[in-house]
Every structure is written in C-alpha cells, then in structure tokens.
Image (cartoon, rainbow, N blue to C red; front, side, top):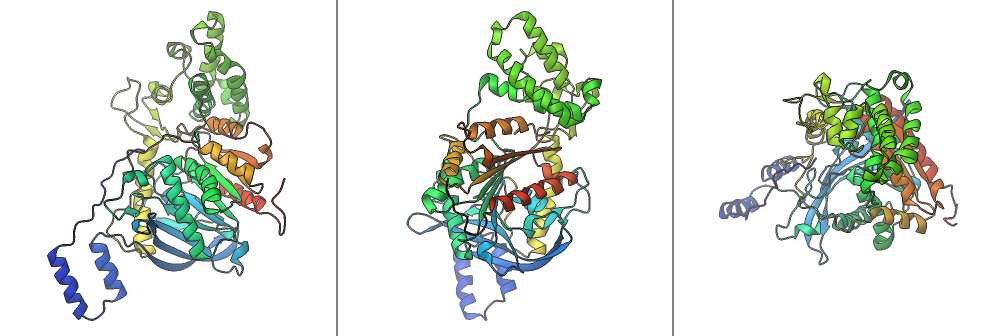
Length: 512
C-alpha cells in the first residue's frame, strides 16, 4: 500500500495574481459560492474552513438526525505559525441535549499515508459504500445509508493526517520530518486533537480512539501522548487489524504465528483435507492455534537441529492445516512465507489469493514463481472507494476544492525508528483505570493476521493485571472485515457494546 502520489506544490504569487487581487478590492464582494470556486481553482487548501449539512439515518429501527461538518483545521509550529492543515469529517447527533455525556470517537486509518476514507464510508459512519454482500464493487458507484453505524451511540470524527485525503503541508519550508515518522506523527496529531476538542467543547465527553492497520500504531501511541502532553484521558482504544505495535516477534515466533491465517484461508478456498473442511471455521482454528503454540513454535525454534523424524511429523501437520503439499513445506524449512503462500495455494487452479483479504482472487501472467503480480483485493477496493469518496465529499457535502483526494499520499521516507506504541498503550492503561482496549481482526487478513493480533494482545500486558480490560473478536473476512455485510453488522454491534461498557456509570471513580 506504499503508493507514491504527487505532492501539490504551492507556487509563488505572480504579478498577474497580485493585479487581480487589487482589482478585486474595487469590485463588489464575491458570493460565498464564487469565492469557493476561486479557492478550488487555485488548488490551495484553506487552513481553516468548514461546510455543514444535515441528514438522518435509521439505525436499529430508530431515526438518528445528525449534522455533518467537512472542514480543515490548522497545524501550528511551536511559534504559532500555520505549517499544515488537516481535513476532517465530523458527525454529530443533533437530538442529544447534553454533549458532556455523549461519547466521541476519533477515527484514523493507517498506511502510513492512508486517508480516513476506509472506515468513514465503509464501517462506522452513517454512509456506507454501494457494494455487494461480500464487499465487491458494483455500479452505480457511491454511498447509501448505513443502518449499522455507531452514530446512535457516539459522535464520530474522521481525521486525515498530512498528505492524506485533502490534508496538506502549507509551508513549503517545513521539514518533512515534522510529520512523517512514528513519533512525529503522534506528537502533532495529539496537539491537533486537543485543539479540536477545545473548539467543539468536548472535554467532558467520554473519548475513544479507533485506528486501523498502521492506524493502530498511531492510536496506541496517541493514548499515552494525549495523557502526558495534553492531559486528555481516554475511555477506550479500538485496534482494527493491528500492527505489531513495536512488540518484536522475530524469527521462529514470526514464522509460527502465520499458520492459523493460512488455515483460515485454505478453509475458505476449500483446499483443506475433507475432515477439516467439513468442520466450521471456528471449530478448525482452535486446533490449529494449539498446534502452533504447543508444537510448531518449539519445532521452529530448534531450526536445523530438529530431529528428522520430528521434522517430517511437523511438516505433515503444517501441510494438513495450510492446504500446501508436504514437499513444499519441507522445501521451505517448515516456514513458508506469506508471499509464497499467496502464489502457491491455488497455483494448480491458475489463481492467486489476496494479501489483505484472501477471499479475493487474482490471475498472474504466469503460474510459476513465488510472487503475485498484483494485490487483487486492493485493486478491487480502490475500484469502489475512489469514486464514492470524491462524489460524497465534493458533491453531496459540498466541500469545494480541486485538490486531489489522496487515498494514499506521499509520506515517505517514514521514520519507523523508536516505535514503542504497544508499551505506550500499556503505560496509558496502567495510569488510567478507565481505559479499555478492543481488538478486531479478520481471519482472512494476510498483512496483519488475526493470530498475530492475539499475540499482540497477550504481550501488551505481560503481568496479566489488566487482561480483563482487553478484548479480542475475529470476523469471517479480511483486513477491512466490515466490507462483508454480515461482518459490518456484527463488528459495529461489537463496537457499540464496547463503547457502552467502557463508558462508566455516573460518579464511578477511576481507581484500582
């Protein structure tokens, strides 16, 4: 997902432009509509702006009226100079009299370099993509009402970090390192969030962060940064398809954790042995997970010194659970890598499986080799998301700009050094007895696998003292589990339950 899109560079103001500006001073005031058109034609992002619409959506059989604001809010440097502006879309339920008790969800996606579009118009918001029931694009493109949105229980803001969506650097002299790195990203976003909460008068609202993919590193780090630098304490953090969060799992651990995902994919593609294939997925996976931790991991740890007979036994079981041949498993020293798996699993059928969602199939130029030609699932998603978000923001909400909406923006080189976001989240939880964490993963996600997410949860709190505040749920789809209509409903219900459970009763003290 590391697409490099062109950065819009602000040109110096020409003499002609200056002359036009002088003439404009003598002319009648421009209408708001005309001013917006001129702003758009210059391809300049206004640092501080907003447009507002109203709407309603039926959720759980009840009509929920809301106001949606699409706007920009500045990023300032330490001297108070505007250096960038972030685009956001903010939904507020309008029939709530007391906002102090109304939960606020702040939503981020990942990449790094990805806009907030994915969860915005496919998961939690009041509008959802026009897709088929399994998440494939259909025409006409666009959005429709989302009867599963969490807007009934929480207001939601979708935030696009610098160079994603419409968000841009405004001062060309600003060092890119100010924005594009694990810790830099967390620091400026915490400041931005604090400003937004102050402007909107939401300091007393129960607050939740939700992040997807790399966005989980972002929100895990933000949980502590908001506490320490902004004195803002959260009620919950939701990790959707989480990354490693800086919790290392190299070598044998990394290789072993992939197997349950391989088994889920092989089950979906109907290439497991008949006895396993006859079982439900959720009956197969516990067996594979137990083998992974109790037998596979210790075997991999022995490397080339594993007894030959034991190696053959392990290879047979890995083949049984992965849908691969014993020979192929042995050729790769028991540790088949994901790229090999996506190419090998359905090689005889002339198909490849998707990286982010192995329900999606691709076709390569040749069936040989160890790498797929393209990511079938991402191509499908861009097919449906790109026209929908542009039409919705530009036309339906009326946010006028000629700036390109970056689904993936240029944020590279990204500084990944000193990532300790998992430990940051643990520290935030330890210092804040209110704070709970909810992890959501798709069984068919090959980039951030569900069993790796479970491992992350296990390692977040080695003491086990906070495990009652950690929750995991898996779904029968991939990286964006909500694209499948059944999981869209279930996952939002789980979020709704988590928000309610993590919002304390009135006057309940935060203490151990």
